[in-house]
Length: 191
Image (cartoon, rainbow, N blue to C red; front, side, top):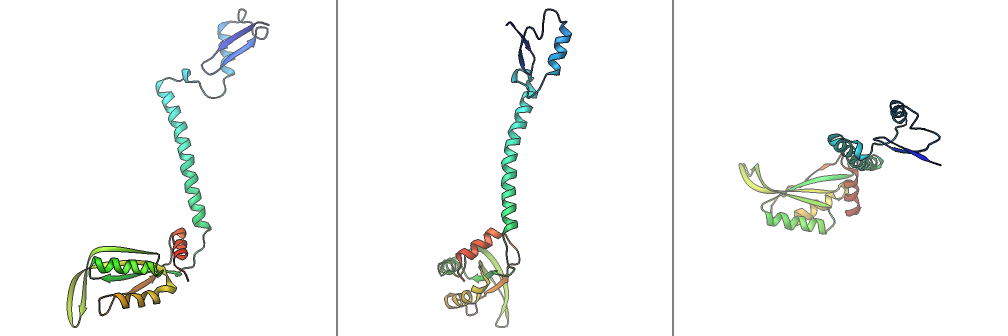
């Protein structure tokens, strides 16, 4: 059986000569038949400069966006599926006279499992009244993340190890937050 090859910019066809007799059909008819059979993606030769780049860019961006949207969806699902009881954790604040005291207190608090994390914020200025006079001092602030049930033990630890006569220990309950982070606090700080 003899074959006739019809080439189009999109696909190449090899059809039996009995199906299409190229020598008997006008050229415009063959082009029309091939045009009607076009399916699928264009081959690289068919694409002209900019359209080839646009097609390739579209494919690459689609693959990237799929991964990005998958990651965002997984994070949203994990955040939505976690449950949190408001106030189960607290953020406590303690001021220290210098970096050395702040680092020693922070290290001791974490080692004693009184908190999961202590942030040291340097160079704050405190204006306060002490013994009838307004004072202004440079201090270092500790931001402590812990369970609310550990705040009394945290306060006792700070009072015993802090150089101030009256150490500042204040805490605020955490109403909302990133559920995986709050779970991490619970995992690190025992009941």
